[in-house]
Image (cartoon, rainbow, N blue to C red; front, side, top):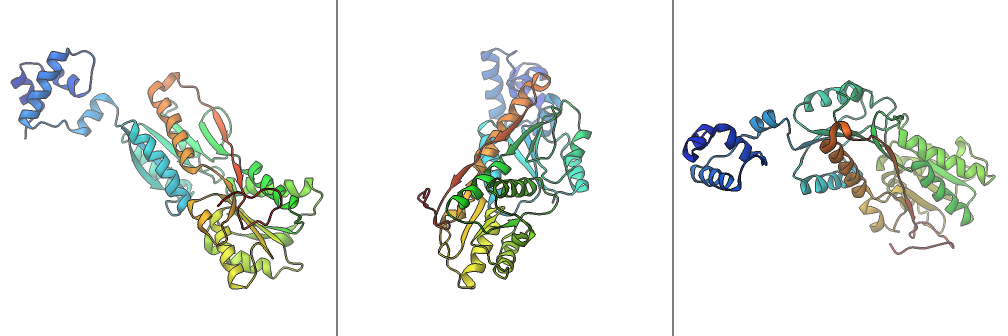
Amino acid sequence: MVTIKDVARAAGVSVATVSRVHNDSTQVTEDTRGRVRAVAARLGYSPHSGARSLSTRKTNGIGVLLPDLHGEFYSELIRGIDQRAQRHGFHLLLASSHNEKAAIAAALQSMRGRVDGLIVMSPAPGAHLPVRDLPASFPVVLLNSAAVGAEFDALAVANAQGSAQMVEHLIAAGHTRIAVIKGPVRNHDAAERLRGYRTALREAGIAAGEALEAQGDFTDTSGYAAGLELLRRVPRPTAIFAANDAMAIGALSALREAGVGVPQEMAVAGFDDIPMARYMHPPLSTVRVDIAALGERATDRLLEAVASRRKHKKRREVVPVTLVIRESCNSPVRRDAP
């Protein structure tokens, strides 16, 4: 196997010079750089990435820790992160935690020394705490975390605002019995979306209570079960707002099997605008989060921190959302093309 010493000897330079050439150092003349690269190519030399990371303390890797890797939301988020990372010469190391602190701590420990920074999605209360064990200068961006304060870079979706706007839209369309399919217990996103739902009803003078609330867990299976459950409520709701699109899609299936027309008898809306939402029958009204763009924005923030390290100013940002009204909501206010 050709070594860095072989290249240095053949090119008539020092080992340090060969190392500088392959690390794109500016301390080498263009003539020397060209000669070293030509010799390396002729001899078939390729620098060992692990050795380079030890010498430069840079891995060109980004760690991404998510609650789960299943579902369109996460695939879109990963797509956005990966596209932006590759554009800047970085690659991803992925892990899932299922929001368990022990799993998060173990994943963070395994990534130390293998990545230049971390994107961590931690919507469970306190799930971000293991991040505090990392060095203060190590770049970390939190996504949809309940963490507050200036010690973290963080991006959060405008969950409460988005759910309130959707419920206000349903109210404007004439609905007063609006049910909600809630997300998982002890989940920051779910709690904020439920808060927005309740706030919109309260401000409209509509009584809100457990009679119109069904528990879900962000899966289509739970949305299906909740849809059937809500059909048994008396009086029956005329609209269902699900805290994410997967549950809304499950509810649509339950309504279809029960012979309930959507939107003629029951309006249905979700949250996220996953790619499948527009292809449902009928197309699903939803609160749109530009999921891939969220991943891109998190990556931009992380790479900014990686480049500037101690000079980087940490900040928390709320990502806006928009309503997308499709055929699952019979609305006189606005109807967008699916």
